[in-house]
Image (cartoon, rainbow, N blue to C red; front, side, top):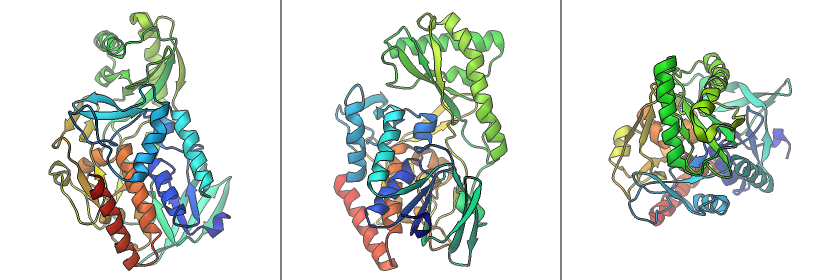
Length: 416
């Protein structure tokens, strides 16, 4: 397929973009997936989030239930055999997560996209759009120092910051600042096989360093990514003290500064934590873990009340199971839970532009309040909204879209 033949263009090759591309391709659509970085996977691989969250209902049973579509279940079942435990682990307060290796996930995503005939363009960015009152008519993408104009029928924005709506001059859902970002780095030659003990040693060391050296309080959050401690290797995550905004230039500079933070504190950790005495940094992951940015305005805005009340919608196309999770710039975590063994629904109108007929959203870009997206941003939910967006975008008429919504909702309800 040539890029100019694309019927559906998906912007952003994170988990939501991947799911949307596969769903649309299976509906026999010609799909172009555009990614501004040089690798697919979004935060899941470029930041190495390290765990799949939101794939299971929170439960105090020993056997958690998967949420979402058969597509979601298939995705999880591909990951499980390659995790050390071969099953989800109980992370905290009934929340089950799945650790994964970023390189395996990235390879898997690329292979599946290739097998389904999705054309992927990396290091490619949408820089301008043309629109009329009802639709986006043209996209201008920059790749290899060239600017190319294409005219897709449908656009699905999975960028995480609503870039298409921004370029089209649409109303955005935004805040003055957002949750703090995190930086993940991999450490080798770790002389410990006990995650709890290592985390306690890290906390003790950071308390001392914050007190003696005036390091930011947010550094107390330094911890091992759950499930990553194996074969004398572990991934560490630290929360940054800076405020995140929609300013791209500021965030770009912070991405560089985060690496400097890691390089500055690590020598002290090797001196203070016995199990890190001979440890070295294997890699500092290239992309800063920015949790939330501005989002596109849809026909409906998901709210905190919808989530905490586990609201159901007749046009629900995804099931959210993760609590409202917020990190502030002191490194403190706040979790707001709803009832265990329950979930809320995300209506299809959160995936549809309020103004443009051929613009769809998925992932961290769905139409949701700042509080609501703090729950819906996790990978398990992004997988579902991406899949649903790909299916809905493939429909040729409003009637067929309504029928698809009914089918999607029926599958979710039958799996509850």
